[in-house]
Length: 159
Image (cartoon, rainbow, N blue to C red; front, side, top):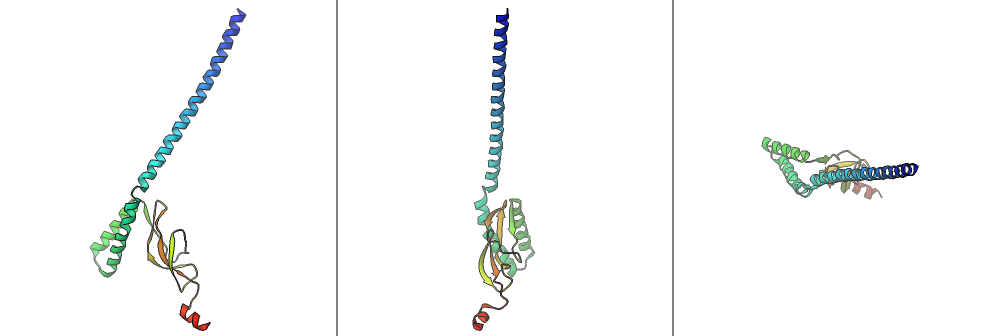
């Protein structure tokens, strides 16, 4: 009888070990699957977010032209259209880069000229820049202060 009990105990231990192995395998498989699901959802979100990037980028010059026209044509309808246009862009995740008076940031700004004014401060925004979900869509084109209070011509005459 002891021999049969030993065989049964041995077989039971063997089966319990196998159960633990299979449970661990199953737990790892489930964890891998959940990680895959999470990664796929993140990728889908990224695709949705940036799928329209090209379209949105091509609409920015249209907004620029409307804003330029509104400086010459004072029309409430034009102002409303620009406001609505900006709201649509905002709803799609586009944010304006606020640059006037800010420290020049080469990551989101492009210096088109160095002018009289406080060194490395944006003196004038020539073209508004935009971010799409915190990713640069178009850099702000700006005039940056060169740190002189005299025009460049007067500085050259003094030398």
